[in-house]
Length: 131
Image (cartoon, rainbow, N blue to C red; front, side, top):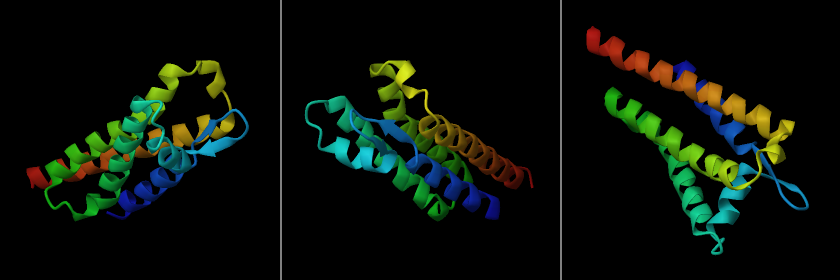
């Protein structure tokens, strides 16, 4: 359980520190999510930001889910919700604009820590089922 809380902390910090380059400055993910909700020029961008915020809430509230299978399914759902604004940006902006360390390093740290979180939750789910 301690590994899961450490991984959740790492993934939340790394997710919020993913930077998107803007025309003037880079902006961290948590500010991007807040500002893009009010972007009425791009409804898809606003939708993916809302989905990511819902995903963040789900990740934070995972400890309160008692059923391990439900916790695992919610974790997988939250993973895709959190990836939605990143995939949306990668789809609509040239890929060469994402070749900078403030995007690559936190993104890979987020992906690795989330996959490890899913593995730990999966193991805890099926180790309790088999016992």
